[in-house]
Structure formats: structure tokens, C-alpha cells
Length: 293
Image (cartoon, rainbow, N blue to C red; front, side, top):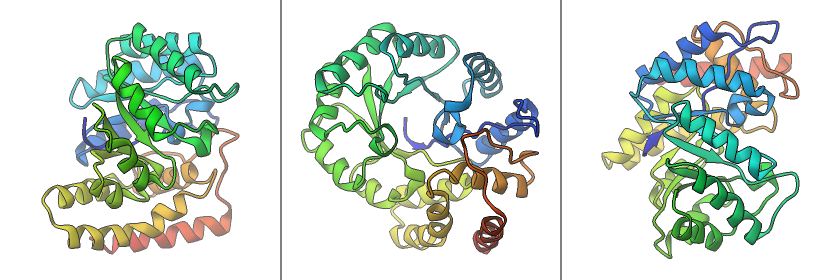
């Protein structure tokens, strides 16, 4: 489990129904771009706006298409422990190679409650669990010491996705005690290089810049740091644009439509649509990225 794991955008027709043909093209595009794995039903997937039956249908279709070529990391966090356990078991049965799990974010448990929640999921599955440390979204803080404790004491917790700014410092805080854990970055790769330097083994951005992120990963892995920074600085304006709260998913989909990969940039409410001025700004950033080629 390492490298570039895009969070798969969920594609919709104009009427809001799932567009399975566009979804298949997007999967093929990401694999052809060199993605090392795929993340399903995360924030960029609009997982919060998908019904349980839709999740099951999408996972089945994507697992068939991928056919084991790369691992699928399926988001299964829930507001209740029993719900998260059932979702995690279903994801494992459906072909997930690992689970990405948010803590309960409605009634927010303390350390003991979080240990209970992740332990319950671990006892119900046999695949790795990635703890999603995303307090900007969940409003559930998980200190570095607690995350390290989870990795040591809960059997299947072996990964953490760190999205708690300042992220680079938290990588160091977690790894200082040498827990048996692999760390990934998120937040659309905003601090990818700093996190890599501090021990990150991968990043989970959106789906629209994966050729560029794979190129960046390969530069870092080959020790070409100056080239990596040059590329990253070129990507940063679009990375930053997509981190605007509520607008990133719409921006990613418009970029994928512009590349001819998916048919429609439709999002599901409460996901926000980019306004007319924002679309012009986004078009300029696409042209800026295109100068790489």
C-alpha cells in the first residue's frame, strides 16, 4: 500500500442517476495514468450523498472492472459503531483490499470510545484499516499518541490518512514512537512533498490530476527533488483552487469533462456547483496545467 490512490469521483447523469459508463471510463483513465490504488466513497466521491444500494452497485461494478489490478480502499465510517461494522463487512465481501474509516462524527466519542469503535470494526474484518484523521471534516480530534496506540493495540489498524493540519508535523509526531503503521496524506496533496519527506508512503488526491501526481511520485521516489518541486509548484494553483470548501468536487468533475473522460459535471446537493466566474478561473488553471505538456 503505497503511492497515488485517487479518491474516485462518482459520476452522475444530468438527472442525478449514477452514470456507470462514465464511471468505467474514469476507472480506466486512472489505471492507465498509473494510479497505484483507488479510494471509493470518500469526500471527493460524494459518499455522503450515496444510498447504501448505490454503494454496493458501484463497488461491485468497479471491483469487476479493476479485477485485482490495484487495491481498492473503501470508505466505511459511520455515525454508529454497528453501522460501521456492517458497512465494513459488506465492503470486504465486495472486494475491498482495505477500509478507510472516519470516526463517529455526530456523537463525538473520546479516546476510549474511539478505541472501542475501531476495535469493533477490526474484530469484524480481516483486511487492513486506514484511520482517517480528518478533524476539519469530522470535528473529532485524534492526537498523534492515540493514532500510534491504535496501530499498536488494534489488530487490523495498519494505516492512517493524516488530514489534520499542520499535517507534516503530525507525521513526525506519529512516527516518533515507531508504531507499526503506514501513513498517507490527503487534503488533495497540498503538502505532499513535506509529508513525503517525513515518512508518507502515499497520497489520496481527487481524480483529475493523477498523471501529474504519479509523475510527482516517481520523481520523489527516484530522488529528483528539484524536479519534483518544480512540478509541484506548477500544480499548486489548481490544488489550492480545489481545496475551497464545498467546491473541489465540482472543479474536479469539470476538469474531467474537459478532458473528455466523463460526460457530466453533475454533483449531488449539498455538494456545491462552481459559479460562472469560477468556471472561467478553473479554465485558466487547466490551461496552466496543460503547459506542462
